[in-house]
Image (cartoon, rainbow, N blue to C red; front, side, top):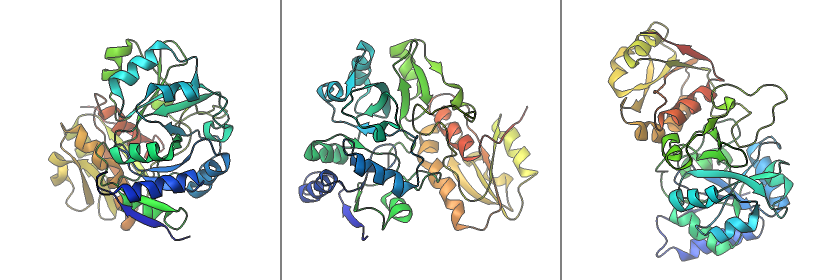
Length: 347
């Protein structure tokens, strides 16, 4: 299959490309679409065959549920979810469009293939005008997991989407690099208190300001155990992993840099903070951004992990930000890339 590339930096003047992408989705095809978080692999969420093709193109396990993307209109929320609590409307009013996915009871119109067989569904409104225009033109909810090959780091540019799934899908819409860089935060609203299933582009602290107490699912901090079933994308399986094994170091930045420096030599790759680059003269280094700039760390983390696949490194060592703000999401992605192989450095 030849994958078309539509360059759509804005809506005005690109209505034809937007309509083409929407028509492909309505016809059951797969289209790579830009969001503020990462690029998604989009299909009609109500078409079981199209959704099955998402799993096939990604090599994604069938029990890993998908998120459906909606317009910024709560009437659509009511179409595809039931027993919607008042808190969901408050969160949508406060944070949509934006990097927040809510887990709600699904309307049976949403197919089992989309939800991974669960009685719940993840819903969000993306903060990217081009993709919202595609949703509106298609007039269907769009299921869109990250547009990478399953297990690899997520894609934050159209070029990375083409690298991973080009030739397997109908088209990619290039809407520019992703502004946030990590996937949406997933909050389960079918329980009390609400439960954080995946940290992401919406910091936990902002959600707590609206929700009050939020429980953190154990899978955020460790691998899921045998027999546990994922209630949201990214919970169960190894994700975001480059080819070389990754080890994550947590603790004071200077202490973690010193600890990594004792292990990282020629043939090693290091993901480190800007302030620590000089610790690793013999390693291949990738700058994650300043210690204090977690927004930049979020934008860079996936490209940093992906970059080592173009080298011959045999081991990758990564400094981990503290868990405040977006640091929780960045750290989660690094730890999942490492299969939760984490070294806690004291001092």
